Length: 122
Image (cartoon, rainbow, N blue to C red; front, side, top):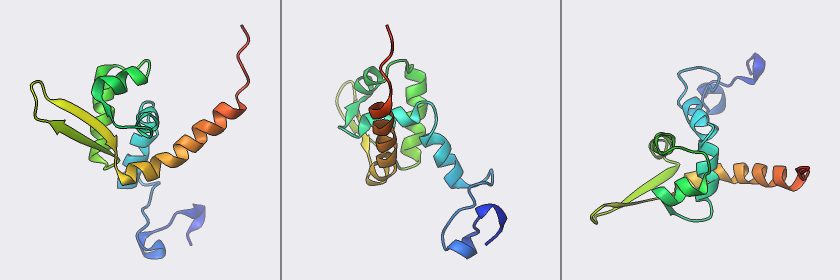
């Protein structure tokens, strides 16, 4: 194997070269670990949510940032977007099977942090 634990596709089957800027896996990691990506994935682990329910569950996120984050996560195949043909259209977001798989360690990380976090002093 090459120095620095960098694997090529030939060495590891279908692995990506994640340290290269043109790697598609790198883009997905950037989306998942973005400021809001983590919160969207964690919020959707418990249930499918409509846009405004999701926005209300993540304090501090603007509609613009939520829209951009959801668009990226849908494009990556982590989140599914379902539109009901009503007037106005109702849009619901949920995790795909891949999204559940990817968000599992994020939820575990969140749980580990909150279990060990010291209470704030008044």
